[in-house]
Amino acid sequence: MSNQIPEEVIEEVRKANDIVDVIGEYVQLTKQGRNYFGLCPFHGEKTPSFSVTQEKQIFHCFGCGKGGNVVTFLMEMESFSFYESLEFLAKRTGISLPESSGQKRFSHSEENQSMLDAYEWLTKLYHHLLRFTKDGKAGYSYFKDRHINDETIEAFQLGFAPNAKDFIVEFLEKKGFNKQLLVKAGLVSLQEDNTVIDRFRGRIIFPIRNHLGKTVAFGARSINDQGPKYLNSSESELFHKGKLLYNFDLAKRYIRKENEAILFEGYMDVISAYQAGVKNVVATMGTAITEHQAKLLKRYVNEVVICYDGDAAGQEASYKAANLLRNAGCEVKVSYLKEGDDPDSFIKEHGGEAFRNQVIRASDTYITFYMRYIKKDYNLSLEAEKLNYIQKVLMELSMVESSIEREYYLQELSKEFEMPIEALREELEGISVKSANKQHKSVENSNTKKTGNYEVRRKLLPAFHNAERRVIYHMLLNEWVAERVQSEIGANFRVDDHKIIVTHLYGFYEAGNAPDVSKFIENITDEHLKQLITEIVMLPEMEEVIDKALQDYIHIIKEQTDEQSTISELKERLKVAEQESDPLKAAQIGQQILEIRRKLKKNS
Image (cartoon, rainbow, N blue to C red; front, side, top):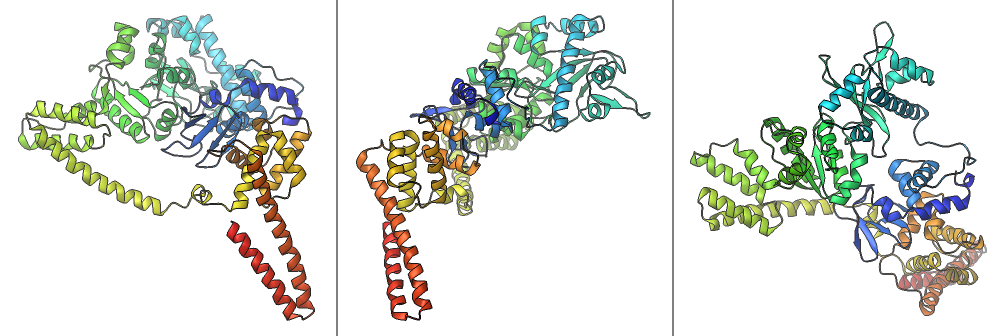
């Protein structure tokens, strides 16, 4: 598709979108030296090996090897086609793509694209019905009674489905959608007589958007005695409720800004908090948080505040969510609401500022929450129960890394149960030693099984291989280096991939391009070569190019290729000697080949 869009337009879009800003919307990046690092979004890892360079406008993961520029990142991350990636970046910066750029290619199947279009039309229709028609008055009154203003109704595109069986069906059929698609998309329900009716009729509508802001499902709530009370779209290729978080598209920029995400259970909690000015808020959709959702939050932020209902069910759900989030690497806090309270009702009664200060900022650390949570399981008036409780808390405390935090809770336990703090310290130390030994064995076992590609790549490369990589590095950043290498070596590199890269690079410069790694990558279609180029250009501790060093690298490469050429010639002569039945000559040639190979091995 790139050849159907003018090169200057592609260049304008790419340069208008700083790669650090774009990737920063998906990955929590921290600056270290000249580059930015974060957890790779393409493979699971606990130690950041994903690097982004602002100077060169590329990314590379030293763990899984993926790399590229801002366009290829979106193609990998979102499964976008080239056109979709470019279109997304163009819209992001207010650039118009030319209409004559050929037929648009979408990463979605034609059927899924039709589903997205149907959801978009219905989102607009439901919202219009709520705001501006008599049919939507009941839904509008419901939101007004819940103190939701027009601005918030607009932001969340809240809507209402009229209590009519075929209104929506007729509307969508006029737009060209067939009934089979609407049934599959979960927008209408198929009846026994093969007729279809609106799945959400007579309900208020909560559009569920993906992280790109596109509606992929609806949540619906009954406002009369119609059952069930809550109803979601059925799951599809576009909608997996265990993978999406409600309001994530609007909240992610505020999550970044606050360096904190607040997790709710319900739509109305999110909407009330957002309206009250607390905007870094998301919610699960009627189910417990999943591992996928926990990892999604971890990619964006370190700290998550769980704010569920204050009843027993809410506390139970908080405990499960806290452990899942901690396993994903998040720092967890848990808010405390009185039994009978929920975030929505608290905000309505006390306001957004009180909610921020008295609930969110006053949230318990995980250990404080844990101590309160498990107390319900023990009769602390009994000595044995009391000791069991303390033992349980100490086991949890042994997993806390901060020595200050551990000491604080030991002091709390000592005061509450009038126990010598030295005894508590000694017990905690014993638990920690056992845990460390167990963990050490686990790590040992894990290390013996490591045979991944990254470990293989880290092995020492031959001298000529390193020399070729270093020369290519400087060729990518300096046109004069490429010109010199071309005149002295041409494409006579030993490694085949390196030959292909430099051949492309010579053509890139001959076309009048200035050194630009990000732009050069765009001209490479082979994914393996793209990853290799980004790996080379992100080589750590690469020195500035100087004439003497460059000449040394060229000499190593030429020597290697010359010796290999000599070996090839000698092999041909050896074959002739053997055919002429001249064993003495064959032995002499064989010895020459052996000596050259020894020399090459020594220099490697």
